Length: 466
Ligand SMILES: *Cc1c(COP(=O)(O)O)cnc(C)c1O
Image 1 (cartoon, rainbow, N blue to C red):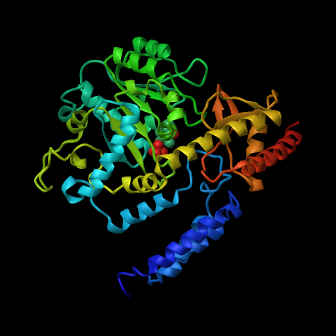
Image 2 (image 1 turned 90 degrees about the horizontal axis):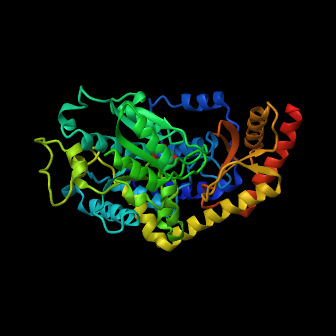
Image 3 (image 1 turned 90 degrees about the vertical axis):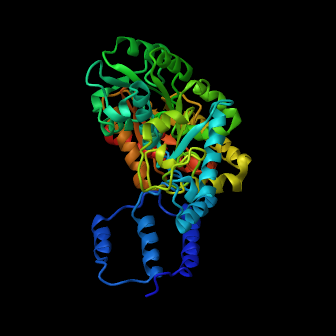
């Protein structure tokens, strides 16, 4: 067998393209037969080689038949969009050439492309300031980087001695509505989940600076990292970024803004006022694999200081090509060591669509969000959240004690119907339905299909619970 079946790649590309063209006609959430899936996988014992053609056909079929199709235009779920074609191409090229980005000298073109993208994003946040940063696997790694840098900033000998054994325990202060990756991150950094102080917003949605200030002043823990979320995962709330930054800085904490999904909209000028105050942060997370629709995983940790990254991650060793201070080697300023060319997919999509192409895409999703919100009201649904982002939490007008059951029943019926996929979210202690415009292929007809399915599900579920 030939080790290199490079000619086979063209056929695979054709098949992928056809799968993408077909997705609109398929069910968003196919009914999954676990036994059938197990039987298909059981046929792979790896004892004999199989043809690339056969294996890639089967893999595509498995992934399209046995999955919630988050790439579908009527997937209104969490922010898992389909990937843009140029981004897929960029990612394929990164896979094919497989450059190693740990040190600048091994892959200068790739390293400089990533540097250019970090600068571009940083400029939308801090117009004149130094911009440092790194691509990450996603928002969790970027947020973890923020905590590590904050610990180094607070305890100058942390990189060597770890957390001091005397004095107050370090604390991370964040909204109770934030992404709870913070709990895992605190554990991964050796602090334990007790280090995460979840501050509940007064309105149940967006945290104010005054509330953060009160939490910091009354805490027994040492505020090391203070986080504002710009675009909560469940309901799209944007915390008071300026107020929280001022509160954090007054306590000498590192201030971080988690804009993992909504931060993609930073490149759309008219959306920039939503992020007012973000420029006061010391660092920011933005996930290109969310709103910017590049394949997973692609996150960005953006910061105002190279020194803080280097103090946190630098390790002297004898086997890496000698570290360059002129060109910053990624392995001494980031979590990863061997490093994939994550920026390739974003570079390819930004260069192909241009900023105007991306801006139109984002503007259109804002419009569709506003339209869905208005249409839901017309159809007598109650709107429960309050955000300019294209994410709507809503519920049937029903106050009985079986409200949660009714809401779950509606979501399940919509998903079973196969026309669309939505989720549920808790806000202000109450369950609601949640629909988010995630796909750049979603159009008005998709909204109408969702509404039709929702209305039918509401009627059926009301009959079932009353
Ligand atoms: C998605 C998300 C995260 C986690 O990012 P991953 O890329 O899934 O690791 C963190 N914060 C917010 C606000 C998010 O939406």
